[in-house]
Image (cartoon, rainbow, N blue to C red):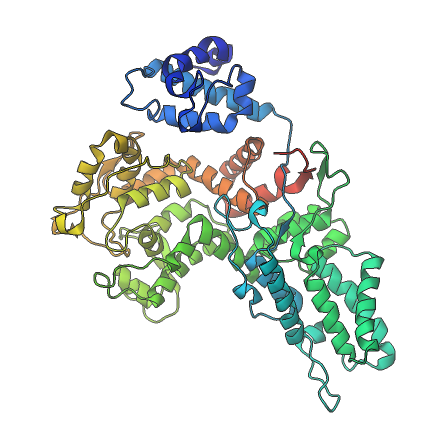
Length: 614
């Protein structure tokens, strides 16, 4: 049905009767099975307000999963098409025509990675003081989400203790002879030796510069004055000039203006008060996005002169090539591709005795290096799916059966003529999506749907039967799963996940190539639920990189925008995502286009008041 016909449809006359006939026995007339009630949806505007619920309803109906197969009364194919097409059309229209909204970004504290990086860049020391902090909570797949970055009394104690250790390490004090061996921090902020008559001026200059860097903005005279008084009190009590500087450092490092990322509002209680970020706020957002740290002097100077927006392309290019962008590589891939989970994954030692911690580290490094290469060389993000090259050392090359790689140094190698290509055939991903003692087509299929295509399957129903134990296994794992899929409760999800997972069955539970499973030849051929056929992982990768490319690019964009904003995406962000994806299509899906699109997008470049916002 075309858009014109759908636009003529009404919820009350065309959609509601389908729901009443097929869905209300469980979800209407006072029934709310699975905590879903449709009684409150009486008009299209109600659907718009409940857009999150209706996005889920559409996916379930489109997959023919709701109403359940066991129900006698189910919509026919025409009714399902009408329901899903109308929902898509009305929600897309709603998203497109809704007033621009940059969304609400909660004032949030620095997470552990941001804290460590900020201390490194601010203090000229690198000893990762956040290592002892409690683990950060995650939301929407990332640990920099403002709504979950809470502050506990224990964490506040950790901040105080860390501030004292940092100050002691960064600021050397005179020894018994009155001599001092200045640290890199002191040599950066002061000129030594410092004559007593010039120390007050030196201290004031330090406080003004240090506070501006720590707070990521121009500081007020009153803020400088208060810190100077604190340092003076220490000196007046008989301590050295350097002890006073230490106290100023400790006070700064436990200040909310340092520990939290603030963006001041003229109308914080008005959710309709939308404004552009000032240039210092923009510099801070960009630096924490790409570097997970504070802006450097170049960004701060451009912001001070009001020239940052005019120089964004050059600055983004510079930042992506800086060594500090490795933090984006490690933290984004660690969470988007779930590489952090590799640290906790323990393959069965009896079956995989050659697997060790060094190999585990090599596996993660390979994937990070491919991502970093795409980022720094401004290559197409589609390379992440189907690159015919990778990065290995001799240990990982031997694991893969690649020849002529010697030494522990990682280097780029060609994968032409091999069954590998892209992150989905990296041992890191293949290992973390396996069980300890065998492969898991279900985990691998689910991983691709969630993290690559952005089309996650619904949660597994209760009481799903497990596969037989190892002692009872006969034939290949694929043959065992046929019986599992005969259960109609399982079949609907498995027809999405299993074909994808079966494609990778030639790779064992630690990412090595094999041709047999339990003594039987492996059959990696299958067909996606959308109809595409393939013979093996190579064929599936081509489908993902070509026919499913748009889904991948959109999924990556949504994940990256979530990471950059520090909040989950809402319906009003769809316009921004659409714009970024279209620009990437025009520009060959280049990595810099993705980053620039995010930095220039409305939700990144603007903000609104918080109270009453969703």
